[in-house]
Length: 258
Image (cartoon, rainbow, N blue to C red; front, top):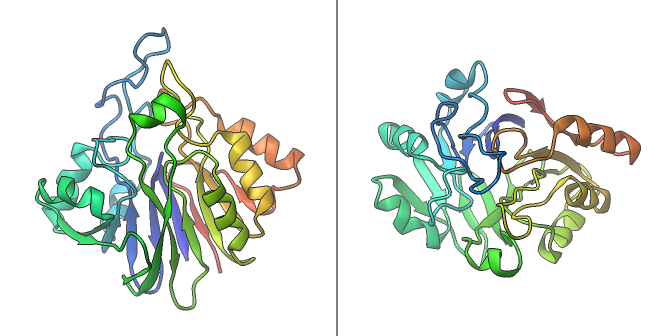
């Protein structure tokens, strides 16, 4: 299995069976609005461009997988991503609540089961609930799903999606085998008011410490409301003795797992 960190939540999963593009935010640098509204830290998003070689990597995709989009979360599926998927008629896997949003935009939608596993793309796909923020800010968000994906002869893969640390997340990482790979958000995204919308570095590393598998931390240094820095995370992984099984990849970096 090869996993390429493209930008923020956008990753490419390559197996013998397929190449899955997850949550394509494909806009050019600064093409999207700020997610900070009342502070001096406002910058248009994304704050970085797509990495070198991204177009060639994207062109190999056979399917797309969406964790959530129904309230217009452009950091997981923006207009550029929609156009890209539609132009290629790429099959798009999603949960039932997101299907109408995607179908209305002319995409080729394949709906996954919400309460049970689905057999698709040569794999067993099990949805895992996300909690996209707590308190009043959480009531405004679309709480999507992560996925545990099991292909034959590949490591189990957990894509957490946009979530803070929850019992669902902890029980999922605890249940994964030693050779599994989990992709966790660690950006600590927050608006000007309210709590965090996804895990920050401390929460992501707490989940990694509980699990036995290998971890990739992303949602980093791409949006103006995600303050966590890669250098800080890497230093923490070393301090906690997790560096041998926790990766903080650069955009464009490909990791290989057996």
